[in-house]
Length: 393
Image (cartoon, rainbow, N blue to C red; front, top):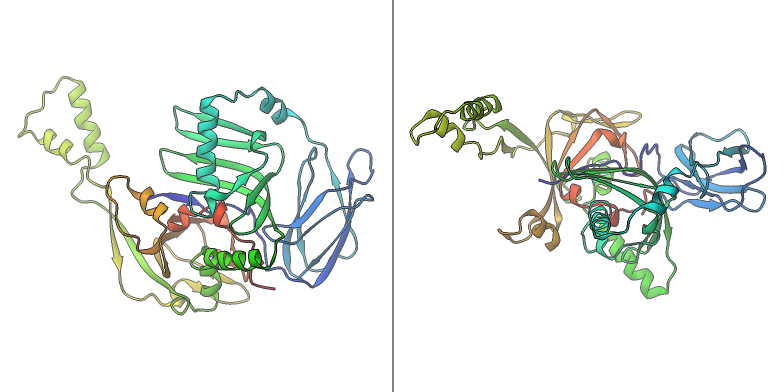
């Protein structure tokens, strides 16, 4: 089962954004104190953003609450500012010029066949392989610095400037400040951290209608949709079926200690025979380590949803989440097995927690680092993501 740590939009703080209070400020160079024009200032993971003018000034309309402002410009270290409530006056951000280590490495990096293969792997694990994701294009992919540890099977990617991603199917240009990307190809885990800003594309009425339909399709059954429905205690009405998933050690499989002892005896010269106990143990080594069992009983909201000033999700173990409103994409079915193809069924995901998390009104988890997705939500990645202010204005 493919797994992904749901880390995109690192440190999402908050409340959904709509027009409300005005946040003003200016951006200066830390050393010279001079204004820095054309700096991107935006609310993390939303469509809300602006560029500073020639005097380094900016103005944003945000809803009162908790947000993260991202201040980013090529050649400077990015700045993340936690905004809560109404600022007492104009904000002043002083940016520090960035060292050029990554840029130097990027220029010297070889663009051979292996680099392009690693680039393909990055796109698969960052953008995804869905019908929306495969149409995405990274305009500045030549700025990526890619490291692949063949011995460990770990792919790491960095970039000295924000990624510029075109998603023509959903009608967004995404400016993504990538802070970390790592794919453990052997373990099947992918994690990426970053600060995206969604900029709606322009187009005629036909394009706008098409984008609206596709955005709704991307939204239905997504983790964002799940969180919003959960806060309202409307999971079943919105098409979600949530059940406990039990994972227990397989009693028919030998323990790792038993298998290692057999291997040690073989290295010591022990000859295996068909009726030997060691041979019988080795024959069971390919059995699954874990057996899954689904508890079909309905789960009361009160057992995992804590209401109050803030909604919290808190539980131990695993939950299976089935969305009955749409079936899986063919590409997802193909990714599960190249040899045993099956018909698409309802989109099925598994969710587990490292720690309890807050469920934000906009559909975000806080802290996202504490949420682990498997199954369909683990397969969907940046190419299927929507801004957190989608549908909330």
